[in-house]
Length: 218
Image (cartoon, rainbow, N blue to C red; front, side, top):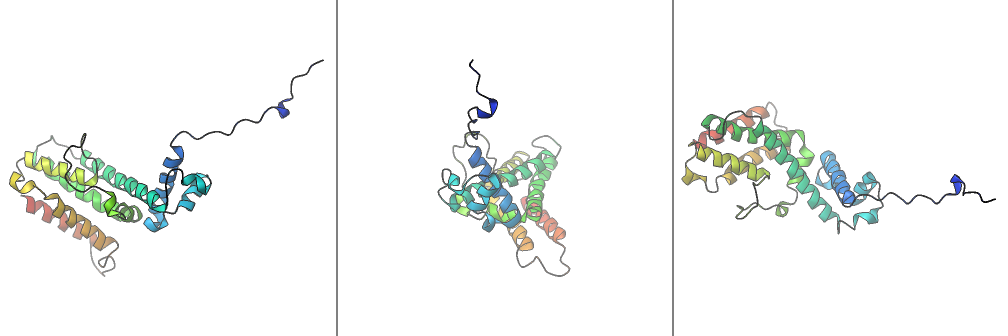
């Protein structure tokens, strides 16, 4: 009499394969969390692979070295900052081209930038850890809107022109001194020499910076 093979002796199931790209995405996500808690120096391949649950050699199928992983994490941190700015802009009511609403949207972008630097110092430092990783020039043939932080700022300034608030002749390149003002204040008051100045009201400094930018553009 022939009996079927007992269940205990059945062929072992093949190991579950991760979906294509899942390991890379997981490593970037793990690196992002490492950066969130410890800044760019905390982004280490071995720690990222341990978080994802893969052997260290698996990382080298996706990243040649730690610098490539860090570059990907920098881009992801920039993306989080851009998302914060987009959400702040979306919270402002008013039609496109309305002078008051356009001004509030620009202000919302600056406030979101300050908030991200304050709430996520590790990600903020990581986002700009490799400055050459990002394109800061004016895009000539970009497909669709520029959704980077700088692109969000440019869109807000373009709306100010359309709203009649900002003179078109002053528009070219003005995003750079504005960005420098906000970024510089965020760095100086967050991790720089203004961080521990006794009695210094950081919220007031941010307000003064945003007010100065608004008054300069009128």
